Figure 1 (tube, helix red, strand yellow):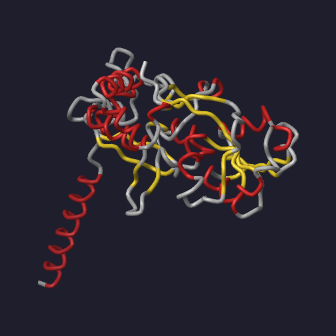
Figure 2 (figure 1 turned 180 degrees about the vertical axis):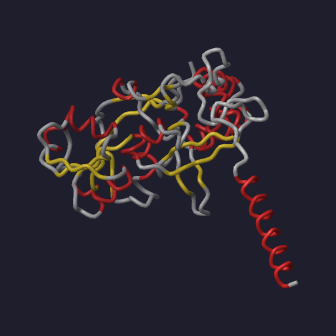
Amino acid sequence: MKKLICLIMALTMIFALFACAKSETKPSPSPSSPSPSGSPDATTSPTATESPSAPADDDLSYILNKGELVIGYTDYAPMNYFDENGTLVGFDTEYAEALCERLGVKAKFVLINWDTKEYELASKNIDCIWNGLTVTEERREHMAFTKSYIVNEQVAVIRAEDAEKYKDLESLKAGKIVAETGSAGEMAVEADLSGAAYTPVASQANALLEVKARTADVAVIDSTMAHSMTGPGTDYADLMIVEGLHLTSEEYAIGLRLGSTAVEKFNEITASLIADGTLQAIAEKYGLADRLITD
């Protein structure tokens, strides 16, 4: 009896092993077999007859589709600066907000390093530079400009007590000069004050601080900023503009990406802001009415 039971158990184990072996040797589909859906597998490249991917949106569509215009700026009165309540204000700030409202997108302001503004623009970290940006031929190689909207010039700012010491270009060359690196002020120093002791600084505001702190004698900055931030009633009441001395003149425009299709639309909306008096009112608010370009 024992032998019979052992024989039955042995036969049962043999049948079980046979069944397992059969299931493991089931053939799998060959690599060339189509998937159940009939589509190519993940490693198969699309054929030349397949539809190409849709082209990337143009710059205006890109801005409209995301619903916001990212604006690169630096702290620069009277264009973009914070008031006593910590609110970002200024001519360029309100101009940008008015244009964005008519464009149907939100204005988003992002503080940038002026030295890397071209990179920020090209890499789409920002959509435009709207911050008293001077139009130059060199910059045209890296960005597209709207029509100019403000006339500006570079001026020399000194301590009021040095009014008799610095009166013309020759006397200015004897002082320690500062200007924002990469700015129109720096270009003016190179053009009109060549040979002077010059030190670049991070911003125009820093240039004024250097003169006030007596670590520099002359700050070459935008006239728009100089008139807004120096003289009686300002934080720089002890500083003054050298009267009758005007260095290079220039115009401000909005800087967009090279080839941007948004340029024409920005110009169109700006024309409407000029036509209905909106831009004139903003310019008067910030003391720039006589510098506004309306043609």
